[in-house]
Each structure stands twice: as C-alpha cells, then as structure tokens.
Amino acid sequence: MIPNTAVDFLRDHPLLRGIPDGELRNVIDAIKLVSLEDGQRLLMEASTSKDCFIIWQGKVQVTSVNLVGKALLLAELGPGELVGEIGLIRNLQRSASVTAIGQVRALRLDRPSFEYLANLSPLFYESVLVNIRIRMIHSMLRKATIWSVIPDAELRGLAEITMIKKVMKGEEIIAEGAVIDQFLMISSGSIELRGRKRRKIVLREGDFYGETELLTDTVSSHTLIAVEDSEILIMGKLEFLTILDYYAPVRQQLIKVLNIRTPHLMEKVTIAFGEEFIVEDNESLPKAKDKWMDQLLWLGGGFLVLSLLALFLHSQWWKIAALIVGGVVGPVAFVAFVRSQQLVGFRQMRVGLVFVSTAIVAIPLAWYLERIWLFEVKANSFDFSQLYVPLSVALIEETAKLLICVILVRTRKIQFLMDAVVFGAAAGMGFAAVESIIYGWVHLDEASSLGMLAVLWMRALLSPFGHGTWTAIATVGIWYASSMHKNSNLGNGKPWTRWRHALEMFLAAVVMHALWNYRFESGLIKAGAMTLVGFMGLYLLFSLLRRGRREEFHVLNMLNPTTHEAILHDDQVKSMTQELYCEGCGSMSPQGTRYCARCSQALRIK
Image (cartoon, rainbow, N blue to C red; front, top):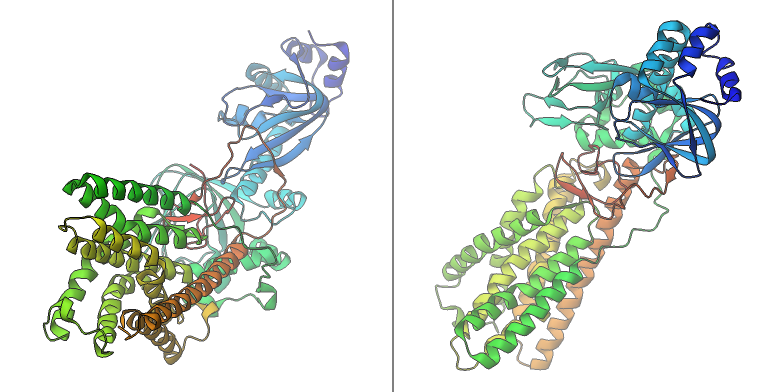
C-alpha cells in the first residue's frame, strides 16, 4: 500500500481528475512505491522493462546517449511528471535513462494499470500521447545532432512542428525529379538513395535529405527507397528556412554539407551567406596521435634483434628476415607518422594498399625506363657526377611513383590536402622500402652481414629525408591541379594557376631528388648537399602538414559547430577513445565528431 499522502497526490493530479474515486482506488491498489537515493537509476536506456512512473517527490534527470557515444541531458523532471510512458506505449526498448537527483520517491504504474486508466479517462490517454510525441521527437532531434547548436528549450519548440512518418521496407519516399518541399531526417532504419549516374548511398539514423533541393530550388536528384522498416522526421520548407535564417551556425553547417555533396550547385543557393560563414578557428589544433611511435619501437626493436642474430649466427634465414624488416622499418614508421597528423583519415589498410601498389608498379617501371632512357647501361655504371644521370633518374622515379597517386587524387573521396600528403608519403615510401631491400640484397651473400646491415641501417635513418617526402610534395601539386576547379576554398580554379602549382611542386621534388643523388667531388660537399636537401624537403613537408591540418580542422568546425548540448559524465557510457568510422566513405574522424568532413554523413558508434 502506498501512503495516504501519495493517494491524495494522485487524486489531485491534473491528468487523473474526473476519474471516479472508486475506479481510481482500483488502480491505486496496484501502484507500488519506489524510493531512490541520489544517483540511482529509475530506468536504464535500452532496457526492456514495461512500467512507467509518476514522480511523487524529488527530481530526476532524463539522459540519453547520442550517436557518437556521449550522454546528453534531455530534461529534468519533478513531482507530477510521468516517465517511462514511451517504452510502455510503443512496446520498445527504453529510449533514455532516468536517474535520481537527491532522494526521489516515485509511484510505479504497470501496463494493466496504465491501460485501465487510459480506458477510464480519454483526457489522461490523449495528454500522454501528446507528451510522448513531443518527448520522442525532441529526443530524436537531439540525438540527430544536426540541430545541436539550438538551445534545448527552443529545440522543444522545433519538436512541436516536426512530424514523424513510418515507412515500410521497399516503400518509395521520393521519386527522382520530384519537387521537394520538406526536409527529411532519418530517425531509425535505412533509406537508400538511387540516382542514374551516382553510386548508391544509404542514409541511416542521424542523416538527412532535402537540404540541397530546398537551398537551390532544384528537383530531387535521387529516388529514396526504404531498405527496411524506418521512421523519418519531416519538417516543412518554411520552417526549415526560418530556422536557417535565425541560426547562423546551422546555416553555415548545411551550406558546407551542400559544398561537399554537390559543389557544382553552390552558385544556385537561394539564401544569403556572407562573411558570417567564415569560421574563426579560435580553438587550438588537437594534438596529433602518437600511435606511430609504437610501430617505430616494434619495428626498430625487431630490426635490432634480427641484426644481432644475422651478425652472430650467420644464418641465411636470419639475414633475409633482417633484410625485409630493415627495408620497411624506416618507410613504415614515416608513413605512420604522417598519417597520425591527419584528422580525417582513411583506414590503415587503404594506406597500406597504396604503399604496396606503388612498390609493385613503380619499381619495375622505373627500372625499365632507366634501362631505355640511360642507353641501356647497367645501374652500377651510371656516372652520377654528371647532372644528366641523377636528373634523369629523379624524373623517371618521381613520375613512376606518381602513377598510383594520380589515380587516387582524382577520386571524389580525396578532398583534403592531407589526403594527398598521406598517400604521397605512402607511395614514396613503398618505393623506398623495395629499393632498400634491393640494395641490401646486393650484400646478402657477403661473408659478413655487416655490409648489408650498414646499408639497411643507413637507409632507414635517412628515409624521412628521401622518397616519402619528395613524393608527398609532388602529390600535393597533382591534388591542387585536380581540386582547385571544384573546391571553393582553393581559389578561382583557373587552369594555369592549377597547373602552375602542380609543376612547381613536381619540379621541386625532382630537383631535390637529383641533388640527393648527385655525386659531388668532395665528400664534405656531398654531405652538405644532402643535409640541405633533407631539411628543405622536411620544411616543405611540415609546412604542408600544418596547412593540411588547419584545412581539416576548419571543415570539421564548420560541420560540427560548438553545441548547446548538456554533455554529462556517465559511468554507464564507455569512454570513447577510438576514432569514429564513417560507413559512407570509410573515413576515420576524431572522437566526438558528429558528421564526417569528407562525405557529411552522420557518424555513429558501433
């Protein structure tokens, strides 16, 4: 039995007034009192309990985990508020957690009692339904994060003008060529975009559609088909444009999305966006990841052990193992370092594929072209004291290494300067690794392993100054040439401007490569020239890294502006230290990012 004061509280509850006392008594007899201490959970998100509660005394926090794993404060509720009714009516898992603030006493209402009250009082049932709709949409909008810059109180008003629509698997939502007057947000399920000339795109929870058509007054370029039973939130065009007019960060965010998805339509945007869209990146750049140190230590330590084994055991197998590990230790560590500077990167497997592909393609091609170009003489008879030979070798090798990069940087996914730097470094170091193994192989059959190991250690130590740096610089030039005409951040895109950048960077790589190989008469001058070339290359490389990181940071800020979300520390939510994987394009984004800077699709934890 619940106390008489609780019974009086229920009789005076606005939603229960008008219910005959005898009928209400039947429900009261089934209600149980629940007492909670500070921090205790009344409801747990994703649980399957089927009760709802009326807060009698105290306050509770309603929290939920957003798509990227952060606990958000959705509401604070006090006496008289109903919690848990969404899961009870919709027969779904709990959509939020409810936690006591201080001491709380709540009255538990099971499903039969709730249904009994609903039959007795249409006012009670209708009021609960209205409340459920607002709370559900508010929670969905908050989790979606596209509206995260809007203060919570105003977001509740937005929930009141947003509709929920259920669509069945296979249902056509929008036809290609249709006029769109609504903004769609995916609440649950999967929606596939099908276009005539474009690859299929799947939108999931947190993604949206219609911003391009509403901002440019164009018809739909896709047919939208539900891949599974789904729910979408719908907002009218007038409401959508009103929000964009009032909230500059949201307007900025969606303009950037448009620039990523359909840059050719930017000139058709019908709303004004001026200098207010220039984001000031006042925050300092995030610290670069240092995982590359692990690879350096493991490979370097392994190479050291294998060197000692090869030196003292004189086994051919130990020599081969040391040769392979010694050939890759410097190049792999260098690529790992460059990749660690990237904020919006690709998976390690893809970078590794560039590393291997360039080695397989560029080494044989360069060897063949050098045989033809340099009069079919043997490599060991090249006279590198004549400028013609090192210049020819540099031109051939840099061109061969760029073949894979040229194919890569012309794809739509390679958007950032840092992409070109990383893939260029991988391509150059793939070439360098095989070249080191070949040089070491020449000394493999010597009586002592010392000559082979000396070559490998020297090339490992000098690897940051060579192929990876040069090819990264040259690849950035190719990226400029292919990207300036389609990226509004890179200038007017005039053909001569684009190709001048490409030519300058390619020539810089060739000249540094040639000077590195040139055989000076004096060893001291040779050392000085190599030092100068090395520092020049690294200076250019680090300048590109800084510029590339700032470019990525700028785009991340535009797509993920500072939010008004109340982020809570929640012991029930696992600490998310890993990067977020984008299912749309395969990019890896920093922790806490909500939208991918490469394709603009919503990110979510697994």
